[in-house]
Length: 225
Length: 103
Image (cartoon, rainbow over all chains, first blue to last red; front, side):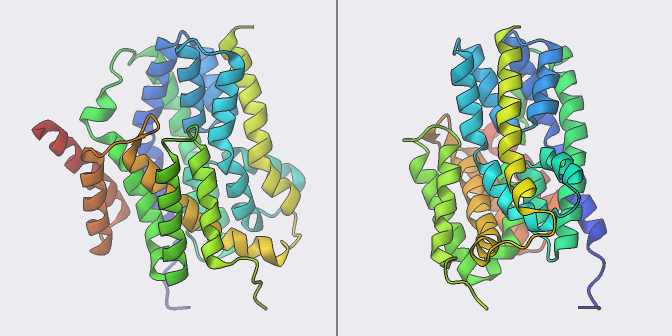
């Protein structure tokens, strides 16, 4: 183990590229807000207080389509149910005083969890989680402001530049090291199949939550000594 | 208060409850029960794979095979060749954009 290089620089580079990768999405969110008649202050309110990209998008698009506040909130909450699973996954790495855990929890997003959970030790998990969460928080909010204020009217930029394809690629890169283990491969395959199979029949976000059931392939109830 | 403000505040409260339940209830040096410990170990594979799959082939709740899948395949190939993370992500975007420009 002692021959392994310090993984922190690698983690910081991952975090930086993810923080940059979310910029186009935050710009698009800002544009979506502008189109839905959501003000700059409200858009930044979403990006700081909610701080969960897909849920913000869902809620604002429901409002933009003339949906009720209740429908918008439910759509966002359903998309974010996975945060509960992320929280359970990250809890061992996020030990500390209550106030510290309360603050760190706000950074619980796909990206911070993915980078955090991909690390070998609890200490590195915590490092990856915090660096990625803070990095994304900064770029996400800055780009939201830019999107509402400056870029309104060019939402299709995300498609033509292929920027939407960076997200599955980034998630795959984070999943990749786990695929060396046959048990994790089975679980990953199960999770992907469940998510795709349920996508047409369940509200957005629920299939991701349902994919957690794939962990049954690893028989977690068989606690090892 | 506008509908957007109400939505932002309600969604923020609910989201924070979901985000913080794990760290607040299970953190603080308490060890997880064995079952949860093992679940925490196995969950990321399922969730990450679900995120890969749905961000690659799901659009507006329907299955959509488009240029994103080509980008993902190139990303997988790059990962297999041990290409650095940033390059993987940029390659995926570039290939997807190129396929879209051609079709």
